[in-house]
Amino acid sequence: MFSSHVAFVLLALLVLITYLVIGRDDDRADIRIRIDKTVEFIRKQQLPNGSFVYAVDHDTLESVGDENNIVRQAGTIYCLAEYEDTFHDESIHSVIDKSLDYMHGLSINRVMGGVLVCSPYKNKSSLGASALTLMGELLHHHATGCEKYREFGDELVQGILAQRIMHKGFAKAPGSTEESPYYNGECYLALAYYQLLFGGLDTQLASLDTYFVGLPFDKGFYQWYMMALDFRLQAGLKDPERYLEVMRTQTRGVDGSYCSKMEGVWTVLKWVQDPEISKKAHEEFQGLLKLQIKEGGFKARPESDTLRIDYTQHCLSMLIKYFLYVS
Image (tube, rainbow, N blue to C red; front, side):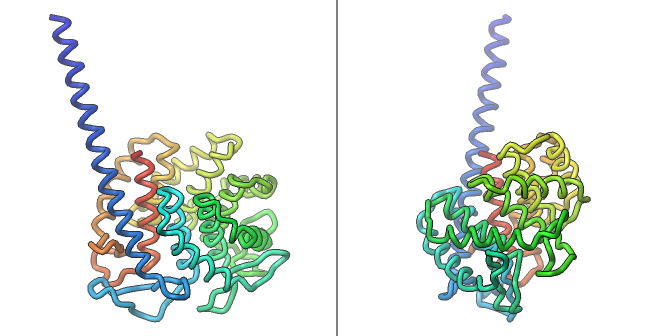
């Protein structure tokens, strides 16, 4: 009697485990299809000069408006390189090379031995674009071993460090004493990944670790900070429990109705087991998947009539992070 009961329980467990494994594999397969469609959509938006069409109509897919943003152009390179580094798709190499060539051509503002990317749309240096271009270069190098842009990457590091405000974060503009939460996050992310790959920034990163952990939640800083902490924890960050608690606390209150914020959430769930965060994340993730059109791009909201490059690149990064999470 007892042995029959045990056998029944074991069989039930086996069926459950099989169901969960198959379900997870199906989920991963669906997400991979979505990722590939998103990458293909972005690839088709690349212009001859290496930049990307900024916004298209969601019905005709024709370019609309005159707006552009160099930070979002750089963010697209970063997310394509994240895809390249994750899936080792050689077909994307030339797209990233072309984009990095474009950014290199804009890096004319020399500062203290380094460079910053200069926006062709506003004719001024962009710290955010510099940091995200650096992320693209570093991920591309890690994925392929390409040395073509390594000197450029090192110059960007020096240019970014030159914009640090003493004992604080990074300047909103060269010479300013005002910080930008977005630039703080983007620069911290890029420097954290550089440190993970090459080292040499121990003092600078330790100072930034201490400063940023004491800041209150900021929606513009959040996802970049969570992703930077991922790299810092991988590098052996001291007192990790303090930072894990910050990740948990900040994520519980985040608005997950944006792909950008979910980049941070899925990153946090690699490190933190929290049923409340996980349940909310899965619910909000399903809503965000509905924003993808059949051609692969993403709307910002269901009622949106345009597909902007930053919406799509943030959603690509979110999909990649979810894929790694369920893997």
